[in-house]
Image 1 (cartoon, helix red, strand yellow):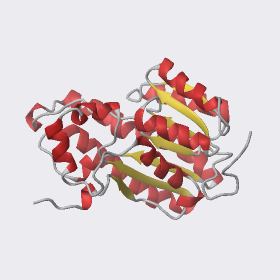
Image 2: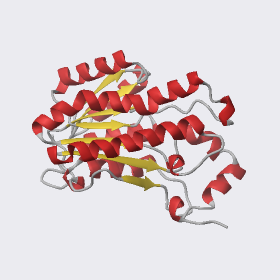
Image 3: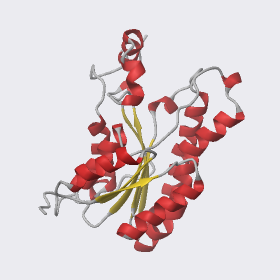
Image 4: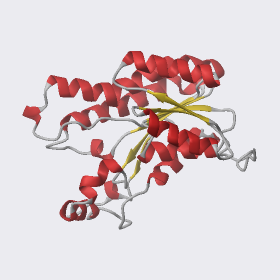
Length: 263
């Protein structure tokens, strides 16, 4: 196989990544681009057929190899199985991309039940925490590791309707900062990427609503919706030697929406 990125700052040959939610949208783009740059990828998704389709496409190309691991990220026992399968296939996992997430309630805070909050936290915070705790010893032992949390710009603002979602994303963001401080000197780099509006199935309802889309675009500094590859590109940078001096940061990939004030 050819290795077009060998010797570059973006060379990921010899590294192994778990990507949760890797069968579609942003997660699929991340898995594809990590493998393109040489990483072996364990693609975690709930639907086996969709995950295997992405793996087959990756394995038909030059670059890293990919396997699928069907996993419900809200279940701790399945996360243990995911790590075991990944280690059996490739050895030490030194890149974690926590991309999968849940957004199951939209409405007033009074309607945010315990069950909704607990399930959202399981998907958006505890999966990141559980996987990090499982993988960090190996990263520390080899003095190299990357934890990349995919957050959301929604967690940078207050919201009257996205209560459980934004709470869980803020918790994950702070956890990543704490890990960066605790383990930075051991060679671990932990960062959050906060996408804005990206053209994915999750955003379809908003993209199909002209009024809502217009309101969203009013803050854009680039005048368009983002693409999954534009998130994946930053993941590759943070996962590789190119991101070696970036630690504990939250980086918005949002077309500049979070920096623009609209009267």
